[in-house]
Structures are given as structure tokens and as C-alpha cells.
Amino acid sequence: MKVDGRPFRSLWLEPDGWSVGAIDQRRLPHEFVVVRIDNVESAADAIRFMLVRGAPLIGATAAYGVALAMRSDVSDAALDRACELLIATRPTAINLKWALEEMQRVLRPRLPAARVETAYARAAEIADEDVAINRGIGRHGLALIEAIAAAKRPGEPVNLLTHCNAGWLATVDWGTATAPIYLAHDRGIRVHVWVDETRPRNQGASLTAWELGHHGVAHTVIADNTGGHLMQHGLVDLVITGTDRVTANGDVCNKIGTYLKALAAQDNRVPFYVALPSPTIDFSISDGLREIPIEQRAAEEVATMTGRTADGRIEVVRVVPEGSPVANYAFDVTPARLVTALITERGVLKPERAALAGAFPERVVDR
Ligand code: MRU
Image 1 (spheres, rainbow, N blue to C red):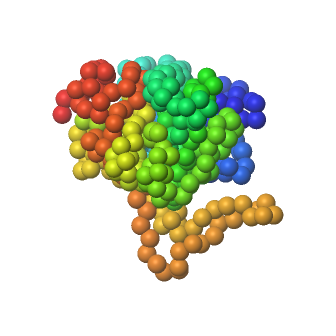
Image 2: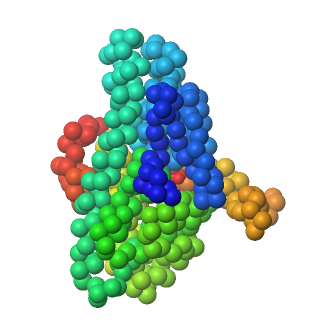
Image 3: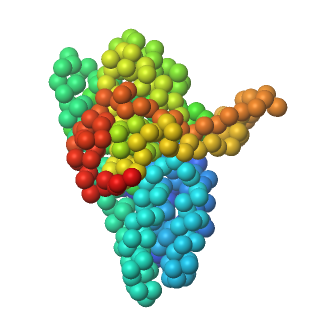
């Protein structure tokens, strides 16, 4: 997508042909800062400390992390070490495990002399595939938005609600939840997006609002607890969120607070869609509540907020009393029964095992 008219992906190979560029997402929306990742440790740190985040982007970054590791040591032991380092960075998004398995699948059989080239080639493919997948999601999701737009009075916008950032910043390009929105906007359909701020890290307020604004998409940032009220008053036509992991039977793990939006959507008969690329499906598990590890993050993320002061300084302020205990669960699970449908690159699917397995038979694993 474009930043100030200049096309950007969220991750790219630098002109030197080996190091990797990324946008430091911790600095948005106040500063647009690009970082260079030049070894596997920096790739792991970029994921762990959330310079890059969002399930598909974490996967693509890890793939390049393996390529960087191969550049300094092509041995099996170095491959093992790189994968162990990277897999330990964040537990919930399954794209990380998927990308590391992909890298090992292509690298293990290769002679050491061919490993660097193979690693960079597969990492580049993973990045390009993500872009193509998201365009596919966009096309299928567009049909849903078009159907709602067709039933509206002329000039009336389609109101969507989204949570966290499942935009182009969370992927290599286009985003998952945002791909249908960008396509609809580009086709001249009037869309308006309610953007959940998404405490504690505010990925909605700082990232989704930033990227929608740069693309010219009408949007309004709301406090996290606002969605239910909006739905009760007919101000939300559909919800589209992203996801960090979908089980074989369609349970959806996503940023904390997603479940509450799904409950409110069901109570108000608002369709609740989840957009996902196929690498986000974990066919090895069927019970999202019990089997998906939920990342618990530092208390500071809840206890503090970061923002820009009137004179332009970026400051961190405490919003919780000193000494009050804080819990920081980063994700929750929305049971499949609350999900209207899953928007994938192969179509809009029921959140059911048969539908997912039928659309992605090559990914199904026996338990
Ligand atoms: O903790 P984050 O910012 O990595 O969480 C991101 C999300 O929850 C996204 O909604 C999800 O990864 C889908 S991104 C296309």
C-alpha cells in the first residue's frame, strides 16, 4: 500500500540483496521509521519486541530470519538454533510455526552449498504468497460488502467494525480484514470503518487508523467498549477481524476483546466475519479454548500508555496506581458458533471442519 504516495510493503529485501527492511511499528502513528534487520537475533528481537507484529508478518519475518541465519552458518545445527530462537518469540500466532516448518522442509534436503539461496528464495515466496493470498481474501470479502452496499440507500456508507490491526501492516501487504475494505473503497463503494482502539497496545488507534487514513478510507476510532452500543443502534453492518490462529473446526483466536465483539454481534444479528490466510489454520487442534496457548505479556503494557505530547515529545505515562497488580492476556478465543463465516483466499467458508478441510485438503493433518 502507499505511504505518502510511495508504495510500501511492511517487509522487504534491501538493495544489498541480503538484509531485510521493516517498518518499526512501535513508532507509529507518530513517526515513520524504517529498520534494517541483518541477523537472526535481530529478526527474533523484531518479533519479540513487536517492531513487526500481526500473524502473517511474524511468519514472513521469521522466514527471512532463517535465511539470515543460513548466511552465517549453513549447518543443520545452525538451522535448528535459528528455528528454536524464532519459535520462542511469540506463542499464539500459528503462522510463525508454519513459516519455520516451511523453511525446514525446503532446507533440510538441500546440500549446505545451496542453502542460502534456497532460504532466501522460499522466504521471498512466503512474502509474495502472503500478498497474493490477501488479494484473494479481498476479492471474496468484497462480494460481502457489495451485497450490503446494494441494499443501502444511495450515498449511505457500509459501516464495518474491526478490532486490532489486521491491515497491511500486520501482513506483507493488503492486510486480511482490510483487504476487502481497501478493494471496496478503491471501487468507489462508500465504506466507513469503526476502529477499536485495542488496548493495551492500541494497534487499532495507532496502526489501523494510520493506514486507513493514508489510503483515504473513512474511519472513526472508538474506545474498545463502544462496539456493542453501536451495534444496538444499527450503526454496524458487519464486523471483520483478523486472526492469529483458527482451529480445524473454526474456533478463532485473535487479539483480546475479539470474543466480546462476537457476543455483541450475535446478540444484535450483525454478521461477524473473520478474514484469514490459510497458513493461519492449525489443522492439528480442534479445541481453541483448551489448545491454543494465550500469550501473557508485560504488565507495563496495561499499566502505561504511550503518546505524543502537545510539544511533539513521545512520552510514556502510567495510568494504573503503583502497586496495583495487572494482568495482560494478549489474545482470546471466539468459538466457531459465534462466527458467521471465514473469509479465506479460497472463498467464504462456514466455520466448520468439513468446510475448512474441503477448501484446504493439502493442509489437513491426522491427529
Ligand atoms: O499482538 P499483535 O499485534 O501481533 O496481534 C495481532 C492481531 O491480533 C491481528 O488481528 C492478527 O494477527 C491478524 S493480522 C492479519
